[in-house]
Length: 461
Ligand SMILES: Cc1ncc(COP(=O)(O)O)c(C=O)c1O
Image (cartoon, rainbow, N blue to C red; front, top):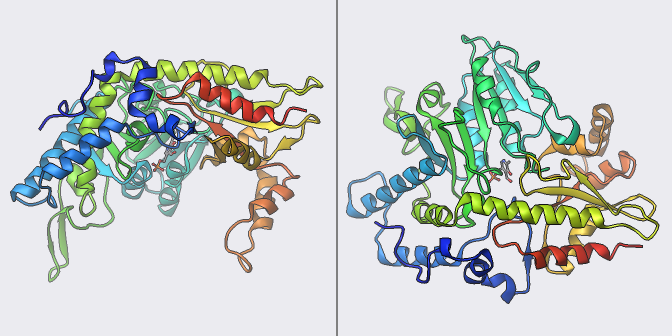
């Protein structure tokens, strides 16, 4: 089994990023498209997809969990994927294991549903968490645990954690969950919070989904109990593979609320008994995505070959160029056209920029209209709240009482069970409840940025 064969041409580490774009992402220029939604997903590398196709066409892969040659072939690649993911986050295999999931959300849910919350437990959530992490609060609430938030302050950075991270009792398991990087503002939150929270008796879940595509994470230095990530955000391909990287000891403190195929040593129907497998295996549900998993070692080897620090430096340059371009946009009357949410410089931030456009009188232009205008220029950006309600509420200056009133006024279950965004925005005083999000990646060029800015300039009056 090798991750180096196939592909052809010089190794990616020898190529300039412009050449790499040509070789691996030629479809962008062939289709005259600009892709600026890397926080949504990375783009697949051509050579990776080719290599995987060759592998699938040459090997015989069967459902794992058996001793047949086909089954063992799949198991070998799954084991190689585990080794590759542990190396990717610099985790000591003696201390950490990997549970493969469908995505980062499923990894967070595994922790939420299995965490031994009890009445005197605390769940502390950063207000900047993605919904997939915020959702854990429902499990905590069901166990009558206390749920508290670490609020956001100026620049969409987390406020001082000391008061909220009140010492947790070692007898009542408590959890602190925060993102290493915001999927809304790109802010990188201090990883020192991991040690601080652990020293105060919390287990820590670090959501690394938006961080690891462009920054190096070392679990030897940042000893989180649980780390969640989605591999398509790093590799583009395949989708459907996420990971919970968990400290073995912390995994042992979780209590799975159910069992399924692949998770048990035995089940007796007659005796109403079951015994979960120990460690990560007890957290797998049914058949893993074994074909997709066989693509992971090669994908992570490609990334290591280019180098995450090099990708990160390129993304930083593109992000700074984008922010400078956005800040330079002004109407003829001198009013700035753009409000950027969060940091407007390159300090302690990754490559995600959330912003809104405003017209010459200062009225916000709806984010959906901006996304549509970009699309007309064949530029892919994202608009909305990006599943990050805490950062959105803070960025838009929404007051809790007003939001509560407008949420209940806009929910019309008798007519339509879904919330009407238009009604909500009207109730909030005709304020668009969303923003535009742009996130460059390894294949982004200055020309891509210029094309987006050109699309935005159409609003200049
Ligand atoms: C910071 C962060 N956490 C969690 C998620 C959820 O990832 P997924 O949708 O792959 O489960 C995302 C997705 O964008 C994210 O950016």
